[in-house]
Every structure is written in C-alpha cells, then in structure tokens.
Amino acid sequence: MFKHINPIFFLFLFCFLSIPLLSQVITIDSHIDIPFDYMENPQHDPGKITDMQVDLAKMKKGGLDSGFFVVYVPQGPLDKAGFKKAKLLAEKKFLAISKMTKTYSNQIGLALAPEDIIQLKNNNLLSAAIGIENGYVIGEDLSLLDHYYSLGARYMTLTHIGHNQIADSSIPSKRLNDEEELHGGISAFGKKAIKRMNKLGMMIDISHISDKASLEAIKLSSAPVIASHSCVKSIADHPRNISDELLFALKENEGVIQITAFANYVKVNNDRFNSIISLGNKVAKLYGDKSFNPSLHSNKREFLEGIENINMEFPIPDIDNFIDHIDYVVDLIGVDYVGISSDFGGGGGISGWMDASETKLLTRKLKERGYSSKEIEKIWGGNILRVWKRVEDIASNT
Ligand SMILES: [Zn+2]
Image (cartoon, rainbow, N blue to C red; front, side, top):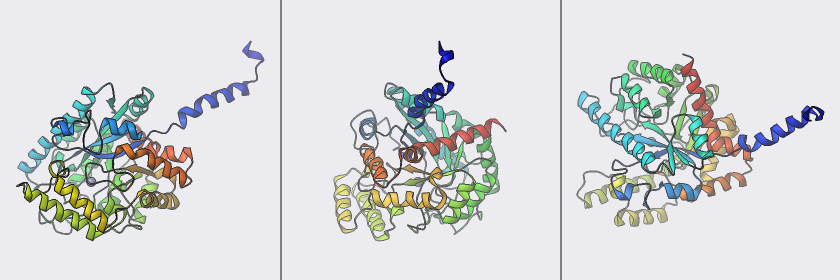
C-alpha cells in the first residue's frame, strides 16, 4: 500500500521524527571539582543530602544532565617524590568517581564516550565523565596517560597554578618560587604528551596554561582542543582568561571555550578575591591547619559568615555578567565554539548559579537573551560533544 504514497511524505515523517532527537538539549558542565574525601566522608557523598555545590539531588533538581568530574591535584615540586605523590592523589579521585557511578548506578553512569552521555540521558540517567586538572600527575612517564585514559580520563588540563614538566602556567606559583616562564611555552616532554593524547583520544585542555603555551598547544595538536573552564580576557583582564587572538585560534582549530562561573574570572575584583584568600587563611589557622582547604573549611560557620560580609562589600557577579562572556564569544567567532562550566567545588559560583540545583535559571536567562533552542543545545553540550567526538575520530585514524 505504501507505493501510492509520495516519497516526500516519508521524508517529512523522517524529519519530523528526527527533530526532537537532534534538538535535544543535554546540559553538560565541563568542570566540577571534587574533594579528596569524596565518597568517604558522608558530607561528601553525592548520593546523600550534602552541602557540596554538586550532588545527585541538586543535579536532578536543576536539570544538569552531565558533568566532567575533575581529578585535580595541586602543583608540587618537579621531582620523583612529587610525581609519585601526585599519582597517588589522582588515583584516589579516579576511584572515588568510579565508586560514585557504581554505588548510584540507578541514578548516574560513567561516560567514556560522547555517545554514552546521549545514551544515559535517553535512559533518564545522569552522567559523569572524567577530566584531569594538572598534567603534573603523569610525571615524566607518558605511559601514565594510557593508564589514566583506561581509568576514564577524557581530557587533561596541562597545568594548574605553577609551571610543570609539560608547560608554563598562566599563573606562576609563588609558593614554589616559579620564575615568569620555565619553558617559554610547551616543554619538549609536553610536545610528546600532546602527541600521545591525540593518539589516545584524550582532549587537550588549555585552561590554566600561559597564552604562549596555549597557542603552541593548538598548533601542535592534530585535534581540536578545549578550554574547560575559562572566561574572556577582553571583558575581564585576568591571566586565566582567553585573549581574542586565542579565541580566533580556537575557532580555526574547531575547539571550544567553556565559559566558567568563577567570580573573579567573570568580573575581576582583586579586592574581593584577596579578602576571600585572607578569610580562608584565617579560618584555616583557626582550625589548626596550615592552609585553606575548601573541603575542610568552606563549610565552617566562620567562613560562611565571612563570605556573607565580603559579598555585601563587593557584590558577586551574576548570570547576566556570565552570559556577557558567552555573547562576546558568539559575536567574535560564532555559536559553535562556546560552552559552559561551573568550577563548582573549586571556587566557582555566581549570583543565581551558586550550585547545580539552580542550573535551570541559566537556561532561562539564555532564552531571555534571545538564544534559540538550537543555539542553547550547542552551548549547553552540543559543542563539547562535537569536539570530543572529533578528538576520538582523529585518534582512531592515526
Ligand atoms: Zn581550575
């Protein structure tokens, strides 16, 4: 009977059926930090009611589908003992993320490929992908890239604060007595690491690295790169933010910048920032600790009260300030090269998006700014998934 039906009807039917799938918004936050006692301390168990900015209940409430949970390790000395310690710390966090997805497999799954994120969403499950923050954790052993990839790492931020064995940081470490530059960009070892990451299909993250190192990384990489949590330098002149020159290079490379909700990168206010640093040190001292540790001190009464006072003195940037950065990237290089990250658990949080439960407000504000559903789909997840897929395809063809 179908032979009498115009084939164009089928085309219409096909298009109609495909549209909802293609325009599905998947909300992906590309940078969520976790504490070192994740899944050990009940307060840091995301399946329970917690005071963390991201837990499973908050993700569901805010409609946050997916996140890159981050294996962050602070910069230490560039020697054997330092590298060994960094590896142990990294493995602890990998284990904790894996434990989360196993313990709460009825709510969240581990995403090892872009398709997993779509599949898990279609099954009404949240998803967790993994990124490494600080290439320090591979020491001088390239085979550790393969090891971490096998544990689920799908991006690696090349440095954190402080130069490491891979590249120069955008912020030299005072604590480690860093000079302005160590390598003048990417080190000889760093070049090999980039090559290995390309081969594995691990995304190269230029957030935190110096401008020179970023341009070099983009040139060296045979695949698109990401800036997993950075803002725009032309709006907020901070060394952690991305210059116009780099944005153009990112477009040419078909990569993506994930605008981040870290207050001082959204709107630079060093008085505010320094007040928070000295408050942190004061609270740490009060509890007999050497330095501020977010997972130990950020929920202490003294810290919360102090933050309230600081917020009154120096108002915290809001979602509109945040979207100004997205608008800027869209105007300069287009809507295909921008995404979203919170840096929750690592100092992130702006007025209106203080934790994952408030995520819907951000989507509403994007609509109010005139972004179409198709554009919001790209900004919230489509762009980073495209980059991830491309990085995988290039890896399998080399
Ligand atoms: Zn960071």
